[in-house]
Amino acid sequence: MLEIGTKAPGFTLPDQNGEIHSLEEFKGKKVILYFYPRDNTPGCTKQACGFGELYPQFQEKGAVVIGISKDSVKSHKKFEEKFNLPFTLLSDPELAAIQGYDVWKEKNMYGKKSMGVVRTTYLIDEDGIIVKALGKVKAADNPQQMIDLLSE
Image 1 (tube, one colour):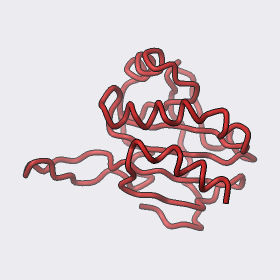
Image 2 (cartoon, rainbow, N blue to C red):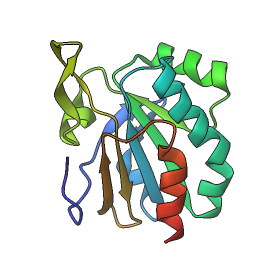
Image 3 (cartoon, rainbow, N blue to C red):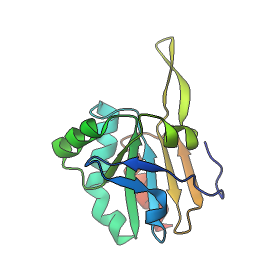
Image 4 (cartoon, one colour):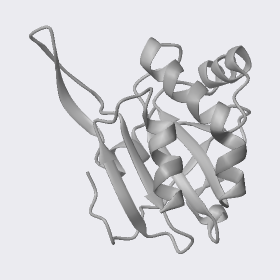
């Protein structure tokens, strides 16, 4: 996980509509950048729907929500439409941002080791500095947790 107080690594990735976004374009806004393992899995769906339900509150606090996984643009589009998600989902199949933010780790599931995304959420301030870094977050609790952090 990256250190609090460091500059957030830049990225340029396609969203669920195939449009290219970079971290630079969000300068001047707080960014909730969350990394999740896969579209349409129970935990990831809970987390995404939670961010979706609270999205108006994030907007009120001047924050944007961006989800990143290694799923394809097409997968993200289906996920967005199925759950009516109001925020940006970025596709990172090459693991550029995923590795840049140090969330690609060895995982151990039922004794089987594999590499994957560890559910992690960063709060980046208006100047592009990481002000909070939360690793191994609980999917269902993470959206409210981030609202609470923005309210501090």
